[in-house]
Length: 139
Image 1 (cartoon, rainbow, N blue to C red):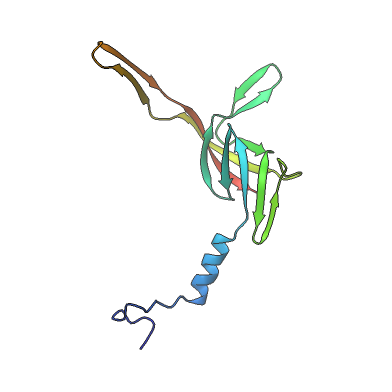
Image 2: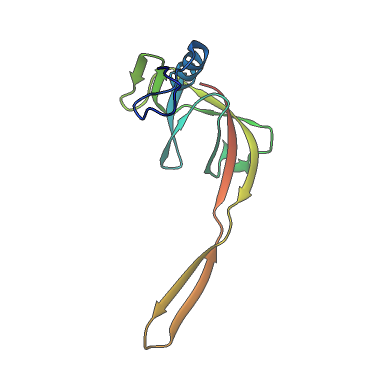
Protein backbone atom coordinates (compact mmCIF):
# COMPACT_ATOMS: atom_id res chain seq x y z
CA UNK A 1 0.00 0.00 0.00
CA UNK A 2 1.35 3.41 -0.98
CA UNK A 3 1.11 6.65 0.95
CA UNK A 4 -0.63 8.25 -2.05
CA UNK A 5 -3.41 5.64 -2.04
CA UNK A 6 -6.72 7.49 -1.65
CA UNK A 7 -8.76 4.42 -0.67
CA UNK A 8 -7.21 4.28 2.80
CA UNK A 9 -8.53 7.02 5.12
CA UNK A 10 -5.39 6.98 7.29
CA UNK A 11 -2.92 7.60 4.45
CA UNK A 12 -1.34 10.98 3.84
CA UNK A 13 0.28 12.18 0.60
CA UNK A 14 4.05 12.32 0.63
CA UNK A 15 5.60 15.78 0.62
CA UNK A 16 8.71 16.18 -1.46
CA UNK A 17 11.86 17.61 0.06
CA UNK A 18 11.66 20.64 -2.25
CA UNK A 19 8.13 21.46 -1.06
CA UNK A 20 9.20 21.10 2.57
CA UNK A 21 12.21 23.39 2.13
CA UNK A 22 10.04 25.97 0.35
CA UNK A 23 7.44 25.83 3.15
CA UNK A 24 10.08 26.02 5.91
CA UNK A 25 11.84 28.98 4.26
CA UNK A 26 8.57 30.91 3.89
CA UNK A 27 7.40 30.26 7.45
CA UNK A 28 10.75 30.95 9.08
CA UNK A 29 11.72 34.09 7.15
CA UNK A 30 12.72 37.34 8.85
CA UNK A 31 9.86 39.49 10.14
CA UNK A 32 9.34 42.37 12.53
CA UNK A 33 6.53 43.91 14.57
CA UNK A 34 6.25 47.68 14.14
CA UNK A 35 4.01 50.26 15.76
CA UNK A 36 2.41 53.14 13.88
CA UNK A 37 -0.84 55.03 14.34
CA UNK A 38 -1.47 53.33 17.70
CA UNK A 39 -1.57 49.89 16.07
CA UNK A 40 0.94 47.06 15.72
CA UNK A 41 1.72 45.32 12.41
CA UNK A 42 3.67 42.14 11.67
CA UNK A 43 5.71 42.87 8.53
CA UNK A 44 8.26 41.14 6.34
CA UNK A 45 10.14 42.24 3.22
CA UNK A 46 7.99 42.49 0.09
CA UNK A 47 4.71 42.69 2.01
CA UNK A 48 2.08 45.39 1.32
CA UNK A 49 0.19 46.93 4.26
CA UNK A 50 -2.36 49.69 4.85
CA UNK A 51 -1.65 51.98 7.81
CA UNK A 52 -3.06 55.23 9.17
CA UNK A 53 -2.13 58.27 7.06
CA UNK A 54 1.59 59.06 7.31
CA UNK A 55 3.22 62.45 6.73
CA UNK A 56 6.70 63.98 6.89
CA UNK A 57 7.22 65.86 10.13
CA UNK A 58 9.16 68.96 9.15
CA UNK A 59 9.72 72.23 10.92
CA UNK A 60 6.53 74.22 11.26
CA UNK A 61 4.10 71.56 10.02
CA UNK A 62 3.65 68.31 8.19
CA UNK A 63 3.65 67.57 4.48
CA UNK A 64 1.95 64.52 2.96
CA UNK A 65 4.11 61.74 1.52
CA UNK A 66 4.10 61.36 -2.26
CA UNK A 67 3.94 58.11 -4.20
CA UNK A 68 7.40 56.53 -4.37
CA UNK A 69 8.74 58.25 -1.23
CA UNK A 70 10.55 56.13 1.33
CA UNK A 71 9.60 55.99 5.00
CA UNK A 72 11.57 54.50 7.89
CA UNK A 73 9.88 53.02 10.98
CA UNK A 74 12.12 53.26 14.04
CA UNK A 75 9.54 51.94 16.52
CA UNK A 76 10.36 48.24 16.05
CA UNK A 77 8.96 46.14 18.90
CA UNK A 78 10.18 42.68 17.83
CA UNK A 79 12.53 41.19 15.24
CA UNK A 80 12.59 37.47 14.39
CA UNK A 81 15.11 35.89 12.03
CA UNK A 82 14.52 32.14 11.90
CA UNK A 83 15.18 30.82 15.41
CA UNK A 84 16.68 34.11 16.69
CA UNK A 85 14.05 36.41 18.27
CA UNK A 86 14.81 39.86 19.72
CA UNK A 87 12.15 41.52 21.84
CA UNK A 88 12.49 45.21 22.69
CA UNK A 89 11.77 46.92 25.99
CA UNK A 90 9.74 48.67 24.54
CA UNK A 91 11.69 49.04 21.24
CA UNK A 92 14.62 47.13 19.77
CA UNK A 93 17.72 49.37 19.65
CA UNK A 94 19.28 49.95 16.26
CA UNK A 95 16.57 48.16 14.24
CA UNK A 96 14.69 49.95 11.49
CA UNK A 97 12.10 48.91 8.93
CA UNK A 98 12.12 50.78 5.62
CA UNK A 99 9.08 51.04 3.38
CA UNK A 100 8.08 52.64 0.07
CA UNK A 101 4.81 54.56 -0.33
CA UNK A 102 2.52 53.02 -2.94
CA UNK A 103 -0.41 55.41 -2.52
CA UNK A 104 -2.29 57.68 -0.14
CA UNK A 105 -6.05 57.53 -0.37
CA UNK A 106 -9.30 57.34 1.57
CA UNK A 107 -11.24 54.21 2.53
CA UNK A 108 -14.77 53.54 1.37
CA UNK A 109 -17.42 55.54 3.19
CA UNK A 110 -18.61 54.16 6.52
CA UNK A 111 -22.20 55.12 7.38
CA UNK A 112 -22.95 56.10 10.98
CA UNK A 113 -26.72 55.94 11.53
CA UNK A 114 -28.20 56.89 14.89
CA UNK A 115 -31.77 55.86 15.58
CA UNK A 116 -34.05 56.13 18.59
CA UNK A 117 -37.27 54.20 18.31
CA UNK A 118 -40.64 55.87 18.84
CA UNK A 119 -39.20 59.42 18.91
CA UNK A 120 -38.59 60.17 15.20
CA UNK A 121 -34.84 60.53 15.92
CA UNK A 122 -32.67 59.68 12.94
CA UNK A 123 -29.20 60.99 12.14
CA UNK A 124 -27.12 59.82 9.18
CA UNK A 125 -23.46 60.70 8.91
CA UNK A 126 -20.65 59.39 6.72
CA UNK A 127 -16.91 59.06 7.36
CA UNK A 128 -13.96 58.26 5.08
CA UNK A 129 -10.71 57.35 6.86
CA UNK A 130 -7.44 58.34 5.21
CA UNK A 131 -4.74 55.68 4.82
CA UNK A 132 -1.28 55.11 3.37
CA UNK A 133 -0.49 51.91 1.49
CA UNK A 134 3.13 50.81 1.89
CA UNK A 135 5.42 48.12 0.52
CA UNK A 136 8.02 46.91 3.02
CA UNK A 137 11.48 47.12 1.43
CA UNK A 138 13.69 45.74 4.21
CA UNK A 139 13.53 44.61 7.80
